[in-house]
Amino acid sequence: RWATRGRDPRLRPITVLYEPPDRLTPAEAGTLVDDSPDTRDLTATVVDLAVRGYLRIAEQKAEHLFGLWSSTDYRFYRTKPSQEWTTLPAYERLLLEALFKDSTTDDVSLSSLENRFYRSLPPIQDAIFESLQKRKYYTQRPDRVKQGYLIGGIVLGMRIVVLYQLFFRFPELAFSLDRGALLLAVAVSTLAA
Image (tube, rainbow, N blue to C red; front, side, top):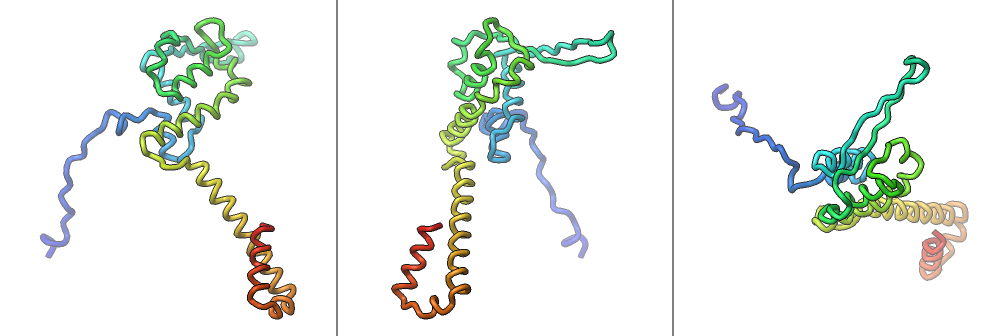
């Protein structure tokens, strides 16, 4: 009996993939994982762009108060001119443009991006969703689908509350109405919601 039912099935060898499936970039893969282009996805994209030679990242440490306290900042150096960015996907190009937008030189510090970079995030996130839709990973944007379900749930909830109020707070009204008036009350409650 053990020979037929007690043995584990034979497994095939597991192949290791050294590249993401379907040549996905870090931003696309991260967005597919949780249906949201998060900051960590964009951070991974910056590192990926550095690996591919579009920029260089350097760590800068500064000591304060005679070495008792130190701070770390990072500096991004543009290594390829913006004319070579045309081959990149739109969101990577927008990310590089946002990094070096106000810089008159070919380098920018991370700390200088603190109060201005966030304004560039919505177009970059939109471009990531457009890229995934173009590649047929999404038929509709997940954030808009969630928003539609939320609005639908609110409308349905309001409708239920109105109908509850109609039937239980005014039962004599609800039972004295004929079918046409009942349909009119439901329609009004739908429009009110």
